Amino acid sequence: MPASPPQDSPVPGSPSLDPRPGGRPGPVVVGVTDRQPAVVLDTAADFAARLGAPLILVAADPTHLPADPRSAADPEAPVVALDPDEQDDDARPRLRTLLEARVAALRADRDLDPAIRLLPGDPAEVLTAVAAAVGAQLIVVGTADRSFRAGVREFFEGSVATHLAHRQTVPVLVVPSPGVTAAADRPRTRA
Image (cartoon, rainbow, N blue to C red; front, top):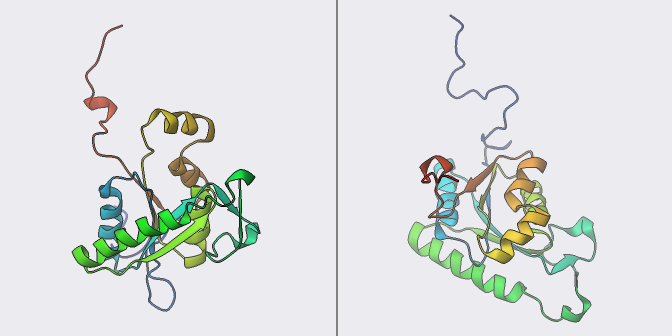
């Protein structure tokens, strides 16, 4: 019978959740949206606490793009609006307020002190850029919004979770929204 590897040794070829060189664990990065269920942030906070890792809350403003794509992870970089008529309609102040409220709640409820990143651009690209810049060990996202408009957008553009799963070297955890039932749990209907 072949010997199994010790519990603390990584499986060859698998992503590691071990601390980075120097003994500090890479952070857990979580994508945050304004209509996101609390379970997504709670799950990310649980993982960060269990791993002894910092937590970074990331929100993306998809109505703007960085003026220079090489500065995608720089929150101070200049931005341009996708629609020139909306150049002054910057969603970032609203998103910053949302992030600050979520950070305050985490500080009060869980004794965590997460960092925030608010960046312009596509959410999947923003999460990828932040994860690479900080050496993240895990990215946490929620399932897609189930509204009609979001469903149409997802049909044509794909979901953030799908984009991350196909273009990421960091493990991605997708947290289902409450109320989502597995296909096996749904009642069967006859046609």
